[in-house]
Length: 141
Figure 1 (tube, rainbow, N blue to C red):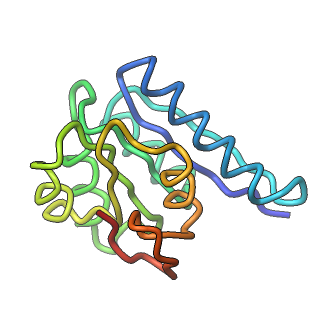
Figure 2 (figure 1 turned 90 degrees about the vertical axis):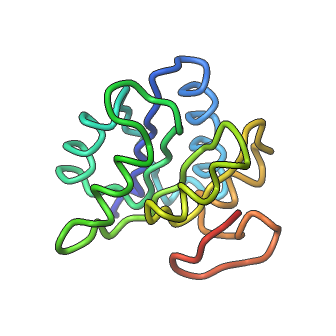
């Protein structure tokens, strides 16, 4: 059985902890037969290397990370040839940055403070952030 992998990216230990709680919530939704592996990176440079090596289904990236932020990470992964196949969700500090998330190629985003249940749905690919069910890589926001 293949594990679902989620890569969480943040330089802030508190945000990283929140993202891990979200990932564990996704694990509960998947059930015990569908294991989830949580990978961590503190910056976009490490995250890009880890993403290409491990190929997680979802990258959950904090907007504010050290060295290379979530937008640079997303642009690098989604702009590659071929593009990164997983979904990338960016956690924004303010709603005014939604256009940057869209510009970078993010598959979805959530503005802090986020609803942990809605974000878990977004990570699991179940909603678009407005409570609508989605399939594939539709944007949220």
